[in-house]
View 1 (spheres, rainbow, N blue to C red):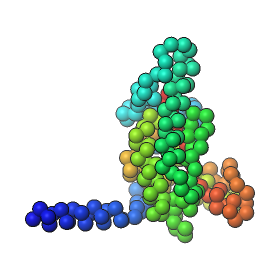
View 2 (tube, one colour):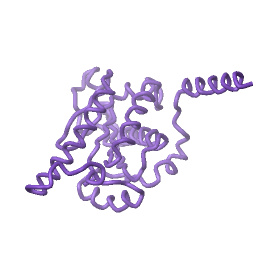
View 3 (tube, rainbow, N blue to C red):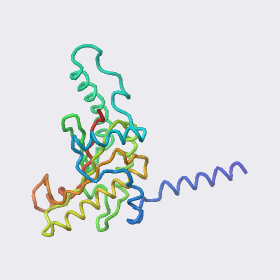
View 4 (spheres, rainbow, N blue to C red):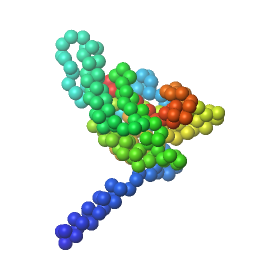
Length: 224
């Protein structure tokens, strides 16, 4: 009987591992994203969101790691502490995401994960792909460990004639990624979600450039 139970448990675990993630119905997205902010992650927005984040059990970087030094200038010591925390996060992400269509970059003390659309979504359908499930699963696991951070999830498209369609498409991508992260344990009190349409292209408008410009960027900032 024990062997039989172990067999069924093993089969169940294997089936669960093989099941590809599918985005929940769009009409349930507000439920999953309740508590997220649909705005740019500006400094003032972070300050306003901080009490909500802390009320949801969120921690500051200073509560997670010890100050670099107890002596000298406090601002300089705090900056070094944030840099240390975010450098560790950057390394974890960089080491885990060395895959086509993904990159990890530093922007001051923030860390930016760039995911081209083809690395996270189906080729001909607006849903998370098997590769996307894998990539976003890795990101979610690391973000759960480095939880003293705010997260901006921004969607982008390539150049499109219809700017309203570009805006809607980019926001759809950002929300799909946000829903995925929320379903995998990332608190929405950390999230800022925006769709930027065709703004801020990072490549040209040739075929390869357009594929690169269709992307989601996850910008991660320390909670001070």
